[in-house]
Image 1 (spheres, rainbow, N blue to C red):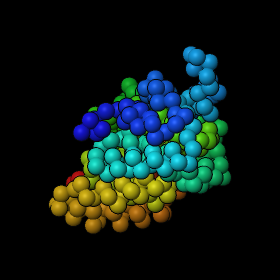
Image 2: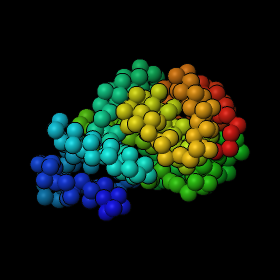
Image 3: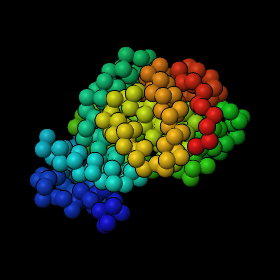
Image 4: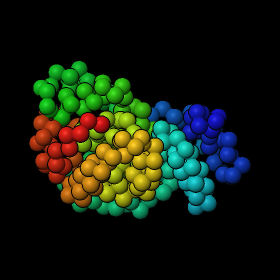
Length: 277
């Protein structure tokens, strides 16, 4: 059971003999989610050793990635609330999907601006007081309401570590930080049912294997009553994911004052089903 309650860096460090060349001690020092790929690049540690392509980066070879993928998948299936292991799984299996997302962002004016400016969604960058003062129904006000109702903050998102491309690492970080915004746009809470619905939408939108895994195996953790609700929710999420524009091509930080309904319409997300989840 110890494997399921310790932080990700401890889990990986315990497996250090399987991963020659990895400096697992550095993971502990870099677990501050307030930092990430958009920070200083090419920095060095206190000992003068390079830290990789971006802050927190841990270079891995193919075998190491396979072992990390297998281990994180096993833990994630056993405990879907291990967000650290889910993050590792997404990074070690998502290269092709991240490349496709980067291509889609590069081909869109707003997406390209995001790639160039690299905004971050975290508490230090949000004026929460101002967002709370926005009118009900605006995207910023409803996003803060979502954070308050579910007792979460954007700072709980793990920094990217295992993506061996600095540009793709930012795409992965952006996807990770946009996740809570999608909960707001899709009208889904953070319980397991809501997470499964969002994962189906994200799986269709992004093609990330981690999202597909969560979408397929997540329902196994639901009660029979909640599984029945998926009969209506999953087709809606899948169709919405297919019809919507790429959700990473929206500069959400510039759209706080936009009505949620207007933003949904612009993205191509139909109103959520009126089902209590």
